[in-house]
Amino acid sequence: MGGGAQAAAKEVDDLKKKVADAEAARDAAVKGAEALKKQAEGLSTEYTRLQKEKESLQNKLDDFEIMIMDDQVKKAK
Image (cartoon, rainbow, N blue to C red; front, side):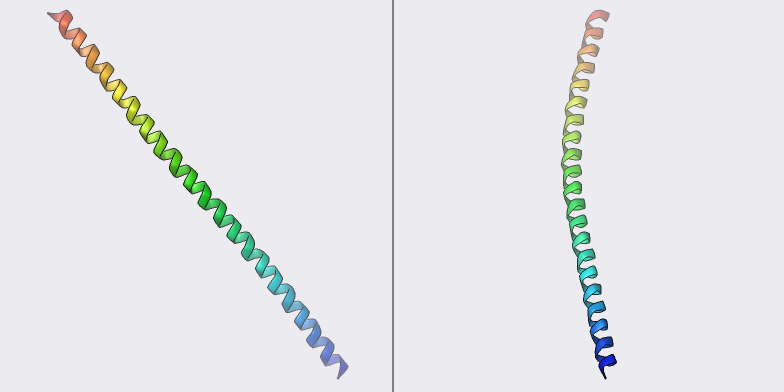
């Protein structure tokens, strides 16, 4: 009977190790997901900033083009 108890104890130890490994993998996955979420938030913020900067530059370009057109009309007269 001693052999059966040893086998059961070994199985329990093996299962405990598997549980610990699974918990470690879960924790790593959660940390990875959190890091990806933060990265996505940062990218979204940067994308919004770049959109605003592009709009501002486009407005300046449009204003510049209007000034050039006005100058060309005045010169043509």
